Amino acid sequence: MAAPDDARHAVRLGERLRHVRQQQGLSLHDVEAMSDGDLKASVVGAYERGERTISITRLERLADFYRIQVGELLRTPDDARDRAEDAHDTGRVVIDLVALEERADEEPILRRYVDSIRSRRGDFNGRVLTVRGADLDTIAAVMDTPPDRLRGRLAETGLLR
Image (cartoon, rainbow, N blue to C red; front, side, top):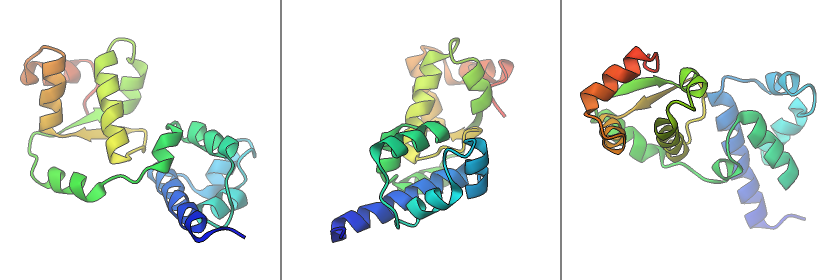
């Protein structure tokens, strides 16, 4: 029989798995179909409800499937802090993550910083990322370019939406 802490952790991990899957716009049946049946909808659903214990191997398989690090499935993002920061930011830009993935070799600094932001937020929808003005200023400083010039360069290279 599972200890109370084990059950609590299983439920929290399940909630995290469901959150990531839903952020990516996938149903349980989509997961099964896209994994060629390797990840059964009923089993993934049981993991998400905390009804079934997941092995490290299966957790790694799910993380690979969702294109995220295992550690991201084990942490709880501070969504309230991120929402509060979003409400006060007017200099936001939206980065096209698909385009960035295609240009990852050309933009390694931007890619690492964007991955860091996604990790902190627990944002794994895989398509776009809204970057706060303060984050863009930090990226510009690291890349040794003025923020306005960085915005222009991102727009010219098709990385902004």
